[in-house]
Length: 156
Image (cartoon, rainbow, N blue to C red; front, side, top):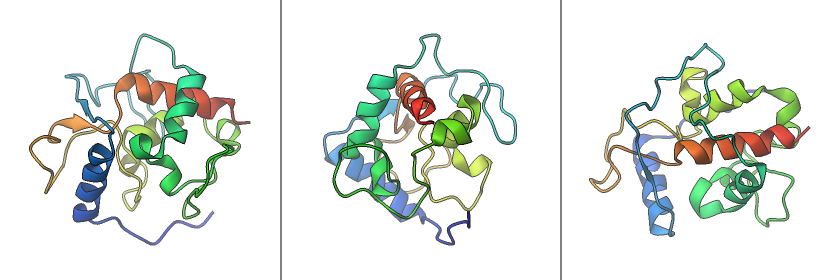
């Protein structure tokens, strides 16, 4: 797979965050433990919650374009129109990556690939040009991250 040569500028990240909340999505307050789980270069081993992820809730989150924004860039085996085509197809994600690798890619994909245009779904810093209402908040909360991972793991 060839890396995408685009970089998402900070104003676009802020616009994406505004679009998230403006479309009815609610960003989650960052817990004190955000980003403290054991991390390897390519994986985040420790689950973010004590409650196992729900594949059903994860599927619904991915399908809900306004909240997760996954389908803006990715295609997925879902009956949702207008899926993106600028990033990896999520079909087969569970066969390509472990849960720990998927967790790292969702929490902060720039730890693995600094040029990634994918947003960090569970990190709050660094954030420039983000409105006060969204500062110190994550795009998805810890349980939502684990739910998306649970669904992605079913895609084999």
